[in-house]
Length: 154
Image 1 (tube, one colour):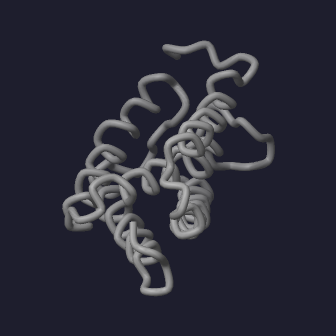
Image 2 (cartoon, one colour):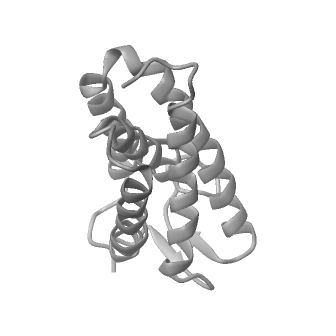
């Protein structure tokens, strides 16, 4: 049973737009391009892996924001990249592995079960623990991209 009414797509549209609006308002302005480069990496990899998981029958979505896109658009194109960019920006001297473990834990063990609970996502042949190392690697590569010597410091 769905917790939220997803009828007109209000939840999906909100989850797509609100994180970006908050990020635009609170980001470190002089780090915008650096952070967006890391966010673009997250969008590309997460959407590709998400579509791959759907095609391989590992999970599916009960609700789509955009028709003909098998993955859940707000997760891949808004929530994940904005959360990663925010983590990179907050406490920039904290070791990336610590931040990556926190990000992976939240994404795997809180966000995924939450999306199952509200009726957006169904796991078929996938356990949340499988997502943990994937999210960790995505975070660490995004962090690396954001901290290349060609960028200004945070």
